[in-house]
Image 1 (cartoon, rainbow, N blue to C red):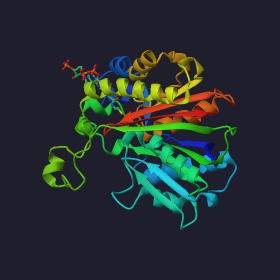
Image 2 (spheres, protein in one colour):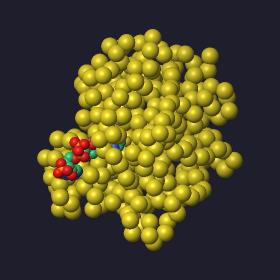
Image 3 (cartoon, rainbow, N blue to C red):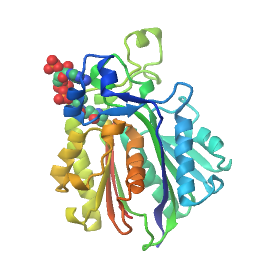
Length: 329
Ligand SMILES: CC(C)(COP(=O)(O)OP(=O)(O)OC[C@H]1O[C@@H](n2cnc3c(N)ncnc32)[C@H](O)[C@@H]1OP(=O)(O)O)[C@@H](O)C(=O)NCCC(=O)NCCS
């Protein structure tokens, strides 16, 4: 039976670093507060001359190179983002052009915030299983620094910019990197606990809206925290149950890197110790849809994953939207 498999990964992280000490000079905060509440020490910020598609293209190119293929074979590009180059067209179309992927292939964005990458993997998995596309590039990219109020200490300490990508293609039930399952969820009743109100048809960008700073991320941190722990844990457990696995079978959890305390809460609920959670939130902050593929790429680069390892993925973000996946590495 045809299954989809991940054959290459890549990431692109802007060189400019913003540390907690830098932030303490901008708003009333401290390194100690940020580390204790979030585990974040620094994050990366994209140069103002560049856009999401530049980061995404770089990550996508690296994923193709790691897979040993030219971008000319990519027939579908899915970009998970809430900070694309512009409202339309899709950032994926800019990536297609910049990457040199063939015109006539498919390219689209999807909006599932921090779950965007795993939503993309699920769609790519379905496309490949039914034979609609052969080489699908799934990218998570965010330039959150552009939609953050840098005078709001309750949000500006949390986020960073990055892109991560995977190239997926067809395999069989013995192929390494194969996707075993994906689960997708959303609860629109919680849409307004984490959102960017202005910039769409509901509240267009007017001088009044900008004056009220409603073009920036608005978040009820405590509520998001509560739902993040509960729902990522539920999603992760469902991924295990669907495949008949137990917590002990999991070699690595590659979860959305929002906050170290959230990951610790998930670890406790799912019964998988923190030493099997890959973490890089200390160096990147919350990069939303980029966080899972960036973490996967770093885990590979650090030699942590062995062929045959069971990987468990989980993410949650604005929507609320959340997702999980199981992959046999
Ligand atoms: C944001 C978060 C770290 C805040 O931690 P918290 O323990 O809930 O803190 P609170 O918001 O209750 O604020 C506690 C106090 O710290 C203050 N505070 C908030 N941000 C601060 C900062 N950066 N530095 C110092 N103090 C800060 C608050 O003003 C408040 O002060 P008060 O008690 O005098 O009113 C936490 O809610 C969280 O991690 N939420 C999830 C956020 C997230 O991951 N979002 C993205 C998901 S995809």
